[in-house]
Amino acid sequence: MTALVQHEFGDPAVVLRAEERPLPEPGPGQVRVRTLLSPIHNHDLWTVRGTYGFKPELPAGAGTEAVGVVDALGEGVEAPAVGTRVVTGGTFGVWAEYFVAGAAGLIPVPDALPDEAAAQLVSMPFSALSLLHSLDLGEGEWLIQNAANGAVGRMVAQLAAARGVNVVGLVRRSAGVEELRAQGIERIVATDAEDWRERVAAITGGAPIRVGVDSVGGSAAGDIVSVLAEKGKLVVFGAMASPTLEIASGDIIFKQVTVTGFWGSVVSREMPAELRGQLFAELIGRALDGSLTLPVAATYPFERIADAVAASGEPGRVGKVLLAP
Image 1 (cartoon, rainbow, N blue to C red):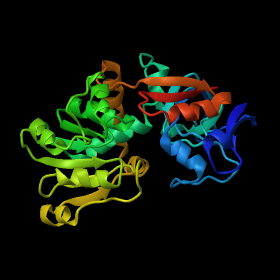
Image 2: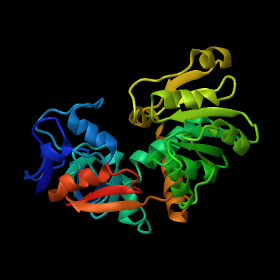
Image 3: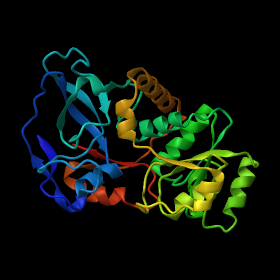
């Protein structure tokens, strides 16, 4: 079979190559899946560079999320049956024509859900919904987030709206406001305007903002904290611009703001199975009724991984870049 393989850590466009590899055989409790589509996530590229929390032994495969069709069953496995279309969000090495995964961790998806949506259902949408669920915000309460024009930012806004939670989104440039409005996402403020805090207050009508989500780092984290209510909470979800947080000590002290982190893979691993099932059912329902949109920017074959990596890094890109065998 063909698979993307790296023999050293570095630029994914350089070190990833399509190679012929042995067809994997499922062990006890595992199934083999024929890959249909797989998205490129930032954490996949960080892993290839060797800068993520998980560092594989080389030579290594790549990719963690995919939709595919069960092709063979390992010992002791009765379900999902051969021919079932399934998704996974935590199986390393899915950028291959076939991969093996634990049967218990695969999620069957309904026929009505297109491959393009199913391929990206788990990692980002499930993280976004898990994050939203963990915030314990009630209907009518307010949340503020930066990177509102990023994939997770869009999903948080859509999923929160479906739950009745109000969201203010921050973007770094004014053009981002119109980009999101074109997708039906309102309540967006650009921080390149001097009066952006006043604009946030006008949107909320002065209502307290209990929670802020930071995916950028640096001074952007301090911007979020500056508009939080007393005893508010800053949840650090990512660090796209800086690995450090720049927050005024006065905001922490006098507002008694707390700062905590959110790592989706750990949260998912520790989540009770019943709750995980409920959240996945909600995700599939939102995707089917259109309240959650999962656009695709482009699809590339494995052999064009360098072009796919470049496309994934395009500024202003709307939708995921997918890989297909």
